[in-house]
Length: 270
Image (cartoon, rainbow, N blue to C red; front, top):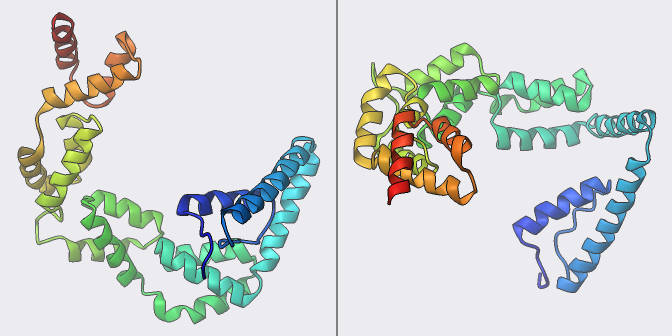
């Protein structure tokens, strides 16, 4: 289809605007930019009107409006097909454990019967061990250590047994699941953020077994604390920080007080 298609950022902003105005139109294609702008302006006008109405609401009116909204959402998701479509999207996006998915569907629908019907239709997709491993492998590729993976899986409501089976699969016998190359990239990224070596070590090492991998990655990639400290110092000075506030900010990045005062003093004499 020819015409004007908004950018991803415009689509996101338009979706928020439509939601605030209470609309479910979800228009994403337009004949040209002028039509898009006209649609945007009309939704913005409705959003402004909604904002004025809400600003004049009493607490009782606001609570009643919220109750009506929640009732509409509940009624919408008491339809099995609509709840099933929502569940499929939620599964794909968040990779939750079965318990987390069921709790989310109950919150949306309020109907235990409809929820169980949807869960039964999804039964073949609800292998918690397989999903935990898939999520764990993705986190491992991001350079996450065992504790970070464990915490993320707990958030998704995976059982302790599924989590431990996942970590045993990912971790060599008695070793670390971290990869030196991946950790090296993370070290470089953290240095750009202005973290000290001490702070990076605490952030990257999840267990004693990770220490050797993290040390090797830092030896390959880290410039050392002085260059990182100078980079962080220049960054915060550009933001206007001085004196005690500047020192405190650098200390929160893990730099030692003696190093911070030494570098600041050396800068003053340059």
